[in-house]
Image (cartoon, rainbow, N blue to C red; front, side, top):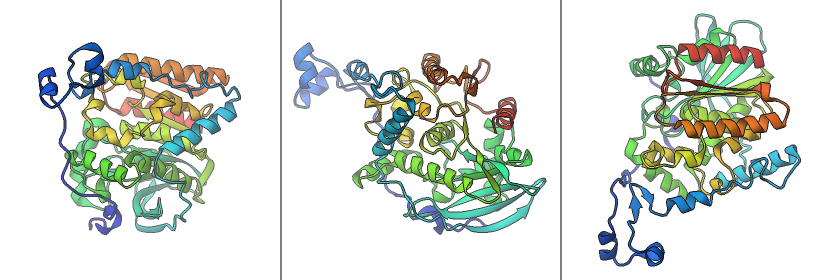
Length: 401
């Protein structure tokens, strides 16, 4: 079996030398030797420029983050009006222009019968700039079927994207890498294939930099993101737009029951899942595994997000002046939402998870819909989406869809 056409998707990948990663602190002496101490030093005496990669005055900046547009803090008291205002603010700060109405113009190839479902590749226009190849799985039977927009993780592994979740029947060269990833994080399962066997249409595409649209090198991420900013756009905003558009495409397929479409993701894919649900009402539900926290609780020395690089895929400039992560996810309320976290997950401190869950619970409770919100911590698990977690997500999808 041949590999996918390398021309599809690669045109949008901005290559170039990677940005250097700042890891060291600058001492007061270094700062003075460089030509001055700045306002903080003038007010409070000599101070280091950075604490690790954080500015010394980061506690003051964190204190200024009050998330005034959050439901309950916003002066808007009508929930539907609040949803419109909050979504409009997120849309504004995606920094990728207006919503894209480009026809999808899908082309279907590489169709193959599998055990209980049919797999095929579909190439479609998620934006006006590029056509993207995705895996599409359809259960046996007459349909229409419920459907899942499946969103892959980051993992600093770029040679595979959709192949992390769907077995690559179309490319033997990626199979070993995909199987290794599935074994490491998913108990050896391909989550998309499992869902298709359970009766769900599944769509899974590569984000920019992964699989057909890469591979991106780890230390190129900041350079790629800064080039987007220089072009008046945003790497994270592009991913958000593409995911929302993919949800619309999936919901519009004749084989899909438009009212029964969910987003499911792990790690960065979880972030993408609740974000897509906030931006697109075509998604009736979302399941997010191992990505939900309060921003302030995450922005602490030593946290992975402070390293730069990978964080740019999730960073919308200016949004924290208005909304926290759970506030954005709450735009999807009162639709059914599932959030799992691993109690041993080093990426998301327990206080951040607790803060986020409390905010989410308050919003769904205010809508008299707390039973539609499924929050769970797995105390013996880390940053994984293993079989018992998958089984619970699958059962939950069967129930809410």
